[in-house]
Every structure is written in C-alpha cells, then in structure tokens.
Amino acid sequence: MIHLDTNVLIGLAEAETSIIRAIGKWLDDNEKFAVSSVAWFEFHCGPLERDAIDLVEQVVAGRVVVFNADHAQRAAELFNSAGRQRASRWDCMIAAAAIESRAPLATRNAADFARFKAYGLDLAAL
Image (cartoon, rainbow, N blue to C red):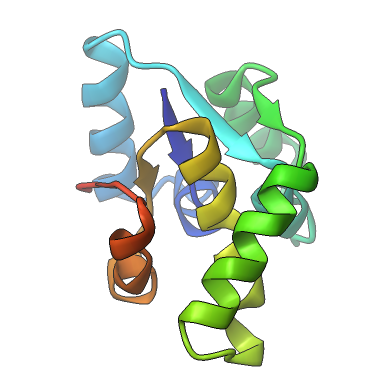
C-alpha cells in the first residue's frame, strides 16, 4: 500500500505524464493506493473537473484513511520535532497518517517530507 500526497492526486487529475507513468507502473505491480483524509480534503478543495475527480477516486478505490487520535498525536510529535513551522502542519498530518499506516508516501515534494524520515516516514520514489 502506498499513500498518495495531495500533489500526486492533483498531478494524476491533471494527467501529468510523470505521475501517470509512476501510478501505471505501480498498478502493473499490483500495488494498492490509499490517501489520508487530510490529503483527500486538500485535493477536493480544487478546482477540479468531475472527470478528473472520478479518475482519482478509481485509483484510490475508496481507501481514504481517516485521521484519528494516533495520527494526531504522531503529527504533533512531528510538528514539535521538526521546528514548529506553521506552514508544515498539513505535511505533518499527511506524514503521520503514512507512518501510522506503515505505508510509504508518494509525493512530488520529497524535500518537504525528508525531515520526517528520521521519525519513520518512508518516501516512495516518483
């Protein structure tokens, strides 16, 4: 199972070649995808066309991981350990959901998430 970051969902919806290629390769390898409810919220903030949303929903196949108390606690630990940068709160939450799910995170912003690797985040190469 690979968690998808918001920017991967948007890239898929916008038919960005590199994202389509990576998702296609993973699908060929029978990989499954999930998305945290935080990233799902960000994605649905749009604006996006209905067809694009439908495509992404097919890829995710209903595997939206609800942000729960364990995720919240882990996100707070990440936030406090990684410099308490207000703008990083969403990233902390998305990273926490992937860590707690023991799933790698696919993101186009690996540099933003690299600081969480020391806390157990595995990044999936795009």
